Picture 1 (cartoon, rainbow, N blue to C red):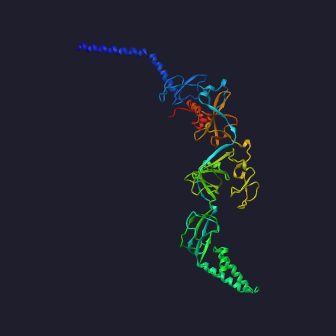
Picture 2 (tube, helix red, strand yellow):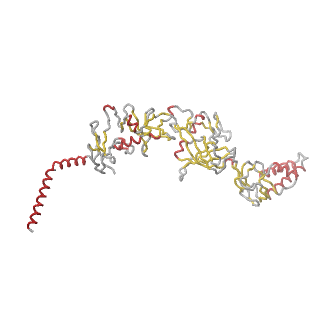
Picture 3 (cartoon, rainbow, N blue to C red):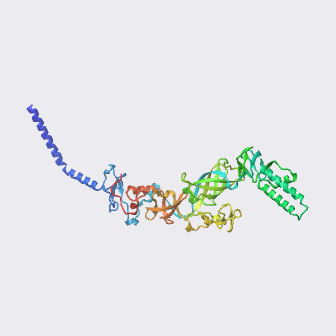
Length: 503
C-alpha cells in the first residue's frame, strides 16, 4: 500500500514540473497575445481619420464599418472576420480637394459595376397624371318641373324615368280650382271688352281691356301657354283639365309624384337634365395638384365604349381636400353630343402636362389667350367679357400657365434613378471624368415627373451625375463608415464624426 502511495506522489510531482516548464517556455508568446489584445481593444473606437500613408491597407467589419484595424482578425463587436479596405486617395496625384465623401472607381471597374452616368440639363419636365372618376349630370342644365298651382294630377303623359322630352311637349294634366277661377275671370273680362268695344272713349272699355290683360298674365304665370289662352278665348268655355307642357329639352331623371296625387304650389313633379353636356367628377391626390390647372384638356376612357377616347376641360378645382380620402375633387366639362356617355359610368382619365421651374404649366397653344373663369371652353384672342355669363376674361398667365418659356424658366432635371432619398434628404453622385471620382452631393428636389426630378438646389446645368448604380456607391461609403445617405445631418455637414458602435 505504501508503494502505491509513493508512486502516485512521484507522478504528481512530475506532472507539476512539466506544466511549469510549459508555462516558462510560452512566456514570450503570452506577451505577444497581450499586445495584440491591447491593440484590438484600443481600436474598437473608430479612427477619426484613416492612416495617412497612401495605399495603406486597413481591415474593417462588413457589419460594423466603424471598426478599422491595421491587421486581419475578428470584429470585437460581432466576431465576424474582418475584410481588407483600401484607404481612399484624397489628394496627391488625383487632385481631389472636395470635402464631400468621394468614391474612386477606374473606368473598367465602373463598367463592371454597372455604373452609368448622364448630364443634368435644363428642359421641361413631363408628368402624366392618372385619375379615376365618374360621369355625373351637368347641374347647370338640370331643370325641376314644379306645380305652379295647387291641384290634382289627373293624367301623366311622361310616366317613367329616363324618357326624353322636348321643349313644348305635354307632361301632365292637372285639375285646379284656381285655374278654373282664373279662366272664368278671363272670359268675363273678354266679354266685357267685346260689349264696350265700340265706345272707345268710355272708361268701361279701358277698364275691361285692363282686366283682360291682367287675366291673361295671371294664367301665363300659372303655367299656361299663349296657344292655350287663345283656345280658351276662342271656345268661350272653361277647361276643367289643363295640360302642362315642358319648358325645356332633356331627359327625365326623376318622377316625384304619381298619377292622382294632390300637389301644392312649388311641389316638384319632374326633374329633367340635358345629357348633351355632362360633368366628369375626378379625385386627385395632393401630389397631383401641382400639375392640374383650370382649362386643361383631359382625356379619358370608359369600358362601356371600348377603343374610344373622350376629351373634356377642367372647369373647377375644389378649394378643399377631403380629410378622409386625402383627395381633392376635380370637375371636368364634357360634350356628349353622340350620347355615348351615361351618368354613373366609371372612367379612367389622364392629364399630360409639362412643368416649368416655378411650378407653372407649359401650354404654348394658350399664348396670348384669354379664358372665361366660369366657362373654360370660352377662349378668346383678346381681353373682354364672356358672351355667356358676362364675366371678365382672364389671361392664361393669371391661371398658372407658362406660354412662352425661356431656357432659364426650365428646371434642371435628372433621372429618378439618380436621386437617393431617405425621407429627410436627397443625394446624387456627381462624376468628375478627369479624376474618375464620384462625389456625394445633397440636393433639393422640386416637381416630380414621370421619370425625372426637377432639382431646385445642389446641381448645375451640364454636371454629370450617376443614373444607374448610385446605391452601390452609397453602400461603399457606408462600408467605410463615411457620411452617406443614411448619415445624420451633423455627419453630413462634418460637425460630428462616427464614434463608438451602434447595434
